[in-house]
Image 1 (cartoon, rainbow, N blue to C red):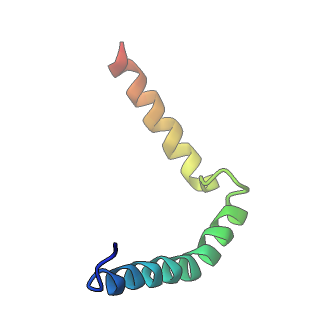
Image 2: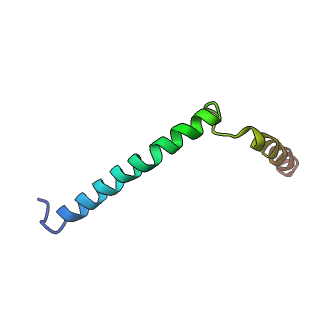
Length: 60
């Protein structure tokens, strides 16, 4: 049985999730289009490769 004190908590959680989806979904869609679905910007690819190369010798 749900206490009447928990109802406002669930409403607040629902509103928070709904607001987050409403606010961030368009931004995430735009970012996905800009990165062609890879979620990595073209100018960041060089940095990612450099970090991967730097990390490989440490693993050996």
